[in-house]
Image (cartoon, rainbow, N blue to C red; front, side, top):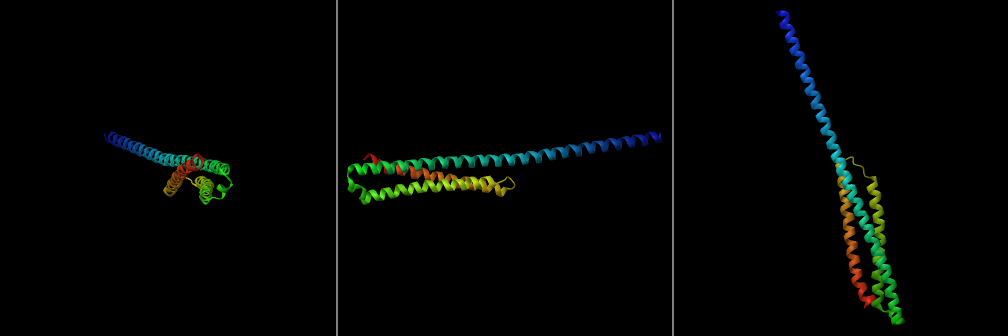
Length: 168
């Protein structure tokens, strides 16, 4: 009977070892899967932030172009109207100040275009290596959105000013 007991004990130990190995193997796979999913989630979040930044940059480009073309169109239309009203209107100080403001808006739109290039360049340099990079991407997106809002405000003000000089 001693051999049978030894055999049963050895078999029981082997089953226990196999069960322990299976549990360890399953836990390791679960850990690796969880780690992989967490890394994918971080990469997906980073990709989403980059997409948001790209969209914000495109919006700023559009606002900059709108401001530029409205400014250029306003300058031409106001100058034409002033010339039609008489040669003295071109030297009128209010007209000169208006044209200077329009030229400032045009310069602002060109400056915004340069900033957009810088945003794009910085975005291309960012890689999803750390939380700091994710924060940098968010910061760039916020700066870009703020610039877009600023340009939209200038566009709206120029439209109001334009109606007085071109249509009035």
